[in-house]
Length: 291
Ligand SMILES: *[C@@H]1O[C@H](CO)[C@@H](O)[C@H](O)[C@H]1NC(C)=O
Image (cartoon, rainbow, N blue to C red; front, top):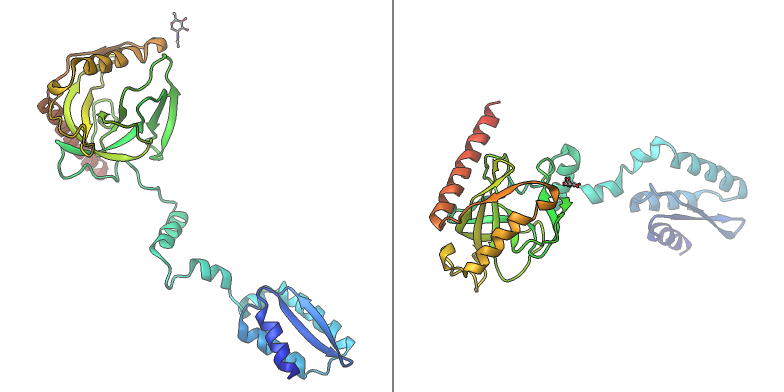
């Protein structure tokens, strides 16, 4: 019966092999933390070998030395090859998430890039995906970092103004300033930076930022029951537009940068501008692939 106890004890305790040695008729515990002996069969075998050996103090000492030497040798790695690593990263039966993590680590690939990896949507240029960089009411100028694809803090606005609506860009578009098309999305709630939503273009605000075209698409959230019915900028209260205009006229004043804002154009003007930026992006991709 004793050997069953031996086998049970030595194989049941995870991470540590407790090897019992019958020495001078007394049960002595030799507890060696042999991480490599995870294999149940291996541990059982060790226990049985020890049981059949005529245990005495000399045997115990010799065994201790042998075990400690083994635990630091490559021999043990051969006996139990990387079991823990295999259970975490095993090729067999691993989930798609694990594969994604492993491929990211091993190939040093980028995470999904919101500008290039997110589709504009089948309804473009009328209804399109929009990645929100800045939430309504924020004074923080969050901006897409083109290199990493992450949202970074570009600056805190110099003037005492906050973004009047959620603000972001349209994926897979390109404008003259080498940035994706900017959008101001009218809706009931501020949303978090880095999310994307479905927007509908209702107009465009021509803007010149220090001599460079930097037009802003005015859109409504296509999934906001209060705003989704708007089809054109002319349906908005005039004050709404006046507020948007004065925000863009003021927000760079304390940086000594001149911003000129023109008269708003209709939804059709917005759709044309988006289509142009989609075409420009397409050209840019084709040229990049040629290089
Ligand atoms: C803007 O110009 C004013 C007056 O010339 C100057 O005092 C201020 O430091 C400038 N601000 C910035 C951010 O350059």
